[in-house]
Image (cartoon, protein in one colour):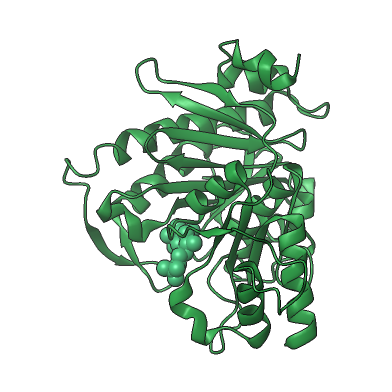
Amino acid sequence: MSNNMKFKRKIVTIERYILENQPDYARGDFTNLLYDIAMAAKLIANKTTRAGLADILGSAGEVNVQGEEQQQLDVYADRTIFRLCDHTGRVCAMASEEHEDILEIPSEFQKGRYVLVYDPLDGSSNIDVNVSIGTIFGIYRCVDWANRGRVEDCLQPGRKLLAAGYVLYGASTMLVYSTGQGVHGFTLDPHIGEFLLSHPDLRFPDPTYYSANHGYYQRWSEGVQAYTSWLQGNQQEEKDAPQGLSERYIGSLVADFHRNLLKGGVFMYPGEKNKPNGKIRLLYEAAPLAYLAHHAGGYASNGQQSILDLTPADLHDRTPFFIGNTRLVQKAEDFIKRLD
Ligand code: AHG
Ligand code: MN
Ligand code: MN
């Protein structure tokens, strides 16, 4: 019986799954940190489902370090994750897309060995219109135990991730994570308040979709434009062009990635002529999803090399981003190398 079938017949909570499948090095701290994130996901999901009802909807009127207006839900998600993880003794520092500097552990609490980086609310332009949004997270080990809790702990390449995942607040809420032993998806049963294993061992199937914001086509490089034409099946570009890919773009990276993970495909947010690094943040978005893609049999690139090999110089570095089925992403690298 396949693993898939075996688990489909069982009710497995995320708590039990995390405990029974923890990596060899994991002691209680690592396992409990993952569980803390699952708890944060439930609290945030509880707010997102009420977004159209409560006064939470709308802008907080603040502007984040990326120069974008924050929504109240961003603020809530950001604070919830921090508050769940700041006092447990499991984490020595955190970094959130919403803060310029690292988030230090308050002095009254102990620092642990792990580092948590997160995009608390991804796809925030979709909050007000009832379209799927998400949370992305990555977990590293501190680089220097004696001096733990510094920005250096956060500035690590994706290759060093111990775990990564995302939460998708969609028609249902899902948490998808990996500790390097496959990628597993859990769906929140809102009636019992538990994430239940629903998608064990996710792997990219043959591609169905490509995802990009075509509104920016004119801003893309020649290589990216030719690659797009290849994705659309243009055999003149190269004889091995895929046939029958359909286009889907939500504008919430988590939702676009999730759909492509389930259905196969490629997502890209390339550099633009006046914005060579594009929009996607290396630390909070690209690296954790690249880690998941890798463990689901896929690949993520900046157009030249694996995202997992890029070390951020700054917490808020951005990177061109191509992610999904390995062959499709490598093809982007080919076009860029040849034409740009
Ligand atoms: P965030 O809401 O965390 O700032 O991220 C938004 C990102 C990402 O989710 C999405 O893929 C991209 O912005 C969409 O950008 P465009 O509207 O430029 O296509
Ligand atoms: Mn984001
Ligand atoms: Mn965000």
